[in-house]
Image 1 (cartoon, rainbow, N blue to C red):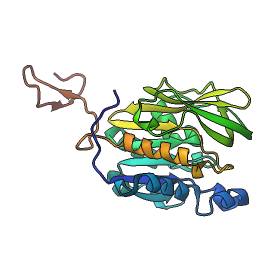
Image 2 (image 1 turned 120 degrees about the horizontal axis):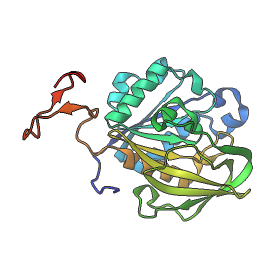
Image 3 (image 1 turned 135 degrees about the vertical axis):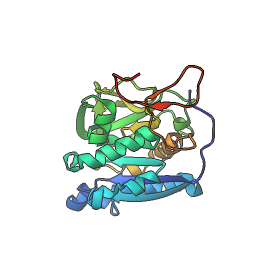
Image 4 (image 1 turned 90 degrees about the vertical axis):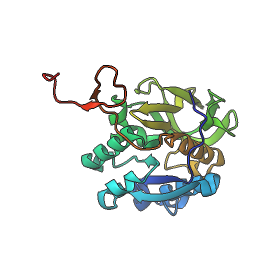
Length: 262
């Protein structure tokens, strides 16, 4: 079920960027002079306007920018990382993980498939096959009724992009929205949704640092649609909790006191 309730606006969005390629590689700086995270932010603002309030944080910020206070006020976190997955502090990963289970939305982009937070949420290696040789990518819409596919051409074409191919070692998704094909004949599940706890997750693969993919209007629209979809419709954020209920008392659960207690 996709749900039809309109989320409250504005949606509080945080774009997390690793921001390492931009610091050391001139080609990437030329494509993204203000950082990939800024380009992603601008794409969301371009499509959602006043319906979203967007800010950016990066790996080098204190606590990687992902403080408890910031996450508590974040409806949707957008994640791009590649070269420095191992540098993300485990305590911060646990914090983000808890907020996703509580109901914060998460968009994981491209090489974020190998981030600590995504592998923790998936419980698998999240490995795949790849090639960076200017492949053309066709992004096919598998589910045209899905809100994330709203306004997206079928297919849309990315002229040059890194190839990602199957097998992609992730759990079967709740919904497959997009499937990509590449010049070499490879296929890849490029747009998938998951639910973990009360949180909604959207993985979207286009977006290698060596190509201007995040400037492309279709990619920006998909990400923006994903932000709206990932925003929780629950009125409050809450961790799913184990509670004991007395017979005929359907509303007043009691805290867990241990396996040996009744």
